[in-house]
Image (cartoon, rainbow, N blue to C red; front, side):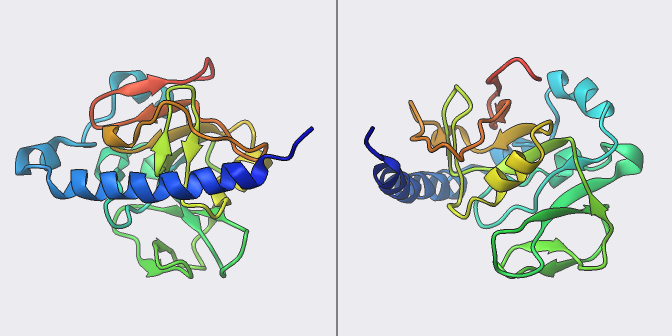
Length: 197
């Protein structure tokens, strides 16, 4: 059997560059009304689902990623969200509780995250940013593998990728360590990718 992991990594690298370009230009060219409307209301199919989760995982948008915090503010137990947290540059990512208005700090990767003393959390439903996706739940992330490792350690967590519709491709190259998504949320639709959601 031939090891194609090097080929898959190279394919992902090329796709990341193309998809980041698409994402950047799409987000930059959204008109004011489209920017106001995008990712501001949860799809009806998710409203009830989120009500059953005490803590919902989200993220702080970076650069031209969709900003979902206004959409998910107030979900979960007493409005509690959990955001990714990195104590240092390395492979480990966990989640920490956060509420709108709580402080954020710059993490080791340059993204905003809860402070080190924020309580740890284990969300069972996680919205995660992506660089690319397909309709079967394939996801191309930033390339660090942080979400894939977290999902491998927490297989019961429901995984909803978030991206602009222009980030869709026919098929994402996949490695054995890649976790598939249960759904993808774009500014246009909620795409169900399996039967867990």
